[in-house]
Length: 521
Image 1 (cartoon, rainbow, N blue to C red):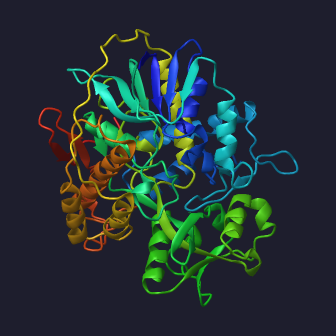
Image 2: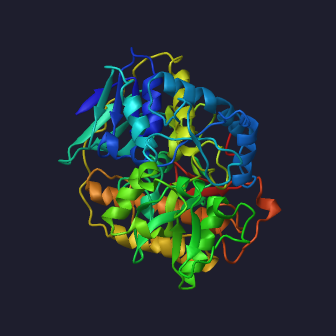
């Protein structure tokens, strides 16, 4: 089957929905999503949207907090644009009827999260912000949009000049479809499912990152993976996310003896940057000490955090005792497909927004609640760009014919996840990174994926994205933000403004590494 449109969007999270809500209604748009619209990370996001709305706050303070969290690797202009546009994005959502939480006077309730100097986190339904946002934005989508669920995009189509003109996808029955458009947008999210412990939805396996790499796009800063400090941990098994807003409301981290583990570690203690808190918890657990969130001083906990309360109840945690067992888990990728301020990648006709993109706003470590904000800001910005483009649908011939399936050996999903958490997790060393890189490279990756099942393709993409993260982590010989090297435990000033870029050589199929070009141009 072959279809043509003016815009193809791969993914259906916040960034994709914001783009759809702001595109002209006379455009023909096709959305392809791997599972269903409401199974994205965005829909399940507990945290809120950061915006300087309080009288004592301002976008510059938000800017400073973002830069400090990013450890000097952010693009200052990208951050400035993000924080200045945040208040207007929230106001537009309010006008659209988005149900953010308000106090008895009708004022927006602003919460506090790690590394924010002011209360500036806008929430909906306590810890159900993602659900509220998705439902709001879905209501703004026009009849010009065709959403196709359970379509696994496995190839970006490029012509001889390298321009992207469409995609190939597989349906649930294995049928291959070709979709063509002059503008193809990746909004596929990050890669949390590369790790055995993660907050991410099951579908978030790094597909968009692998797709972009195979199409010849530049990727940047792939070593920076943020581990959220507080995942619900039952006998060592990760069961789900416990939002940072719980600590924002006053919960503190303690070990089994009741000792506060963040005392003396950082001036902001339990609200320090995520990588600092995650590393402190990891150290405790490595020493055989269990870690808990003590939330006894939070009144009406279940009302304020219904999602967390339900998660705890479902896993046998008695909230009356006031302690939630926690451990870190892979949460967010700061790096990704290199883009400019409008979401354009280095491949003509290909765009990236949301977590799959690296815009320069997060640097080495994302500030809490800047992820939904980034999706909202860049989704709207890309819409403004596309709304001004001339609309000539390309007339390329769809590729035909499948190669015979060759027997290939691929590791099981759990084997990839376990190896990544052990060798490329919170604490990394050169020896373990080299082992992982060699292990990944021992598997044959076919150039043509047509004959593979969706399960096989997913594992191929997981291997490619794991290789990108591992290779970048091996190159950066320092510790900064979400990247911690035990053999290089300190920040190195020589690396402060240097970005690791990876790109596939389209002619030779080789890769090169560069540490010179900025992430944001």
